[in-house]
Every structure is written in C-alpha cells, then in structure tokens.
Length: 390
Image 1 (spheres, one colour):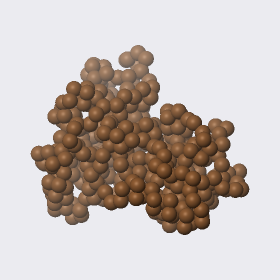
Image 2: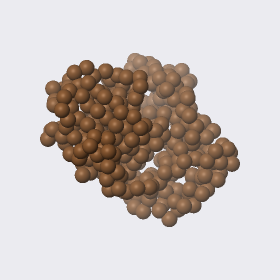
Image 3: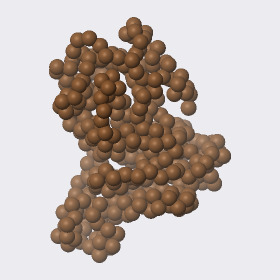
Image 4: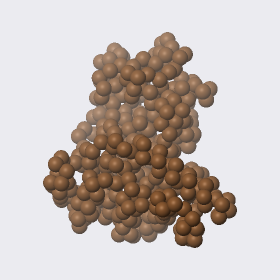
C-alpha cells in the first residue's frame, strides 16, 4: 500500500510549501471506488453496489489573491492556471479539466469560487477503472467548501461533480462514482438506486479484503462498445414499452416481464436486456445476502455477474476471463467479476484476509503464464468518503 494517509498528507503539504512558499490552510481527500456488483445497470436507471476505497486524491490548498486558481500536480509534475473569469477546457494539462469543471459548476450555482493555490496528488492508478476522475472532482468541491466555510448536502455535491464531468469534461458518466466518493463508509458497501438516489449501507463480510487485479490490457473497445450497449438497451425499452405499461428504462422490466415478452426482441438486444434485468435482481439479492451474513451467496452473485457480462452483455475478453478463473480457483476467494466498462481493465474479488497472499501468488502466476504479463494486484479496504485530513 505504501505510505500512510498521514504521511501522504504531510508530503502534499510539503509540496505546497515548496511550490507556493507558504502553509496550506487545509488538506482534503476524496477516495476512488470499486463497483462490487451492478455492471452497466447505472445508465439503465437501476441498482449498483460500489464501495469507496483507501486509494484517493489529496489536495492541499489556500485562498490566494487575484482571479486565478493555480494547481500543481505532483503526479504529472506540471502547473495549470485557471482564470476564474474565463473557465475553459484545455488540451494541455487535461487532468485539470476535472478541476475546471467543478469550478465552473460552483460559479453556475452562484457559489463562491475563490482564487486559490493548490497542490494535488493521487495514488489511484489512472485508467484502472477505480474512478480517479470522480475523486479529483469531489476533492476539488471539498476543498472549495473548506476554504470558504461553505456547506453542501452530500447528494448535491455528488450531482454537481457529475454535471462537471458530463457538461464540462464531456464524459456521459452516471452518478455512482461521485456519489460513493462523497458518501462512502469504512468497512461498508453502498446499495444505490441510480434513479431515486435512495441508498443504504451494508457491512462487507468480516475478515475480507477487496482485491483488484489489473489486466494491463488497454480498454481500446470500451468507449465505442459502451455506446453500442446503451443504444441496444434503449432499443429494448422502446420495443418492450409497446407490451409493458409505464416503463421508461430496463430498470422497470422485471425478470417475469422479460420471460413473457423477451421473444419480441432481436436476439442480441434480448441478450443485453437479460443481462441488465438479471443484474439489477442480483444487486438486490447481494444486499439481502450481506444483511443476512450469507457471504457464500454474496460471492456466488459476483461470479454470476461475471458470467452474465461475459455471455450476455459480451464485454469480457480472454484476459478478464483468465483473471476471474484464476481468482475463483483460490479457496479463500468468495467471488470475482470484471469491473467497469469491460474489454480489459480490472477484476474485483472479495478475498479472506488469510488467503490474500495465496490469491496474489496464484492469480499472478496463472495470468502471467497465459497473458505473458504480470497483473497489477491491489489489496484494498472499504473507506470513508471525502473529507478533511488536516
């Protein structure tokens, strides 16, 4: 895991002093996240089950003079200057667009956006599907509020950061990433209804860790195929709406509805709909399993989710399947599935504490033998959402 949060907070404060020649007023953090179950249900207005993780973005900041926000990125080794009277997207220092988007949304909401000096550092692997972008957005919002003694409801903050990504950065993400980055709880996963934003927490199985295995395979198809899947889901709804009253998304279609009317859908569209409808049901079952302390059932649902993503939604690939198969071969692994957009990226597994070393060894060896490259394995804990560190 490397340095502790306290050590990293001291280090980012040192970076701030070295860059700006004074003390930061505050240090904040916002976590990345894993999607334990609920693959591609978010944009179908369904249910998801994420957890915030102990990989995060740290920001040290202080109010400055003038009309500019100056941000030093430790990870990229570069400074970006943002003129508050003319906030616009940039091609260079593109990481700063997430910060710019949040500043823009604060301005649009009529909230104070002071000139600031900021140092930022993160230990969330970029492009890994652990949502470094949402962490950067939420950390920015948290920093602004701390520096202005502002107050904002957690739901409002998540929605503001989502708008920053949708409208300013131009990425059509759902609400899950920002919501869990704001509201996560240590040791727990969140059940989130993406339509209503109703949510509740459930304890993760006692004595387990969240283990993410990065395939190192670039997700070259993920963006284009994501758009195809969204369109197929919308096609399913437009056809089923003629036979089922009052539906506006696949979230409204029950397993029984699909059994009754699925034959009216083109074959491929029916497969996509089956994944989403059953995945929503699996998320509900996962919540019941956790609340009942049935960790075996919870793990089994993760495995079923992977099989459905592989066979029905068709977003897996050899590398993802090799990682998942190696994971479930370890006796202490409760369950494992591909996470995120698919076509590469990471698997997420829930593993007993005492089996983590064996898991790491077995998955690394088996995957390297087939893929010719070692996976990057991160052993994580469910963490609290965003807040002040010092």
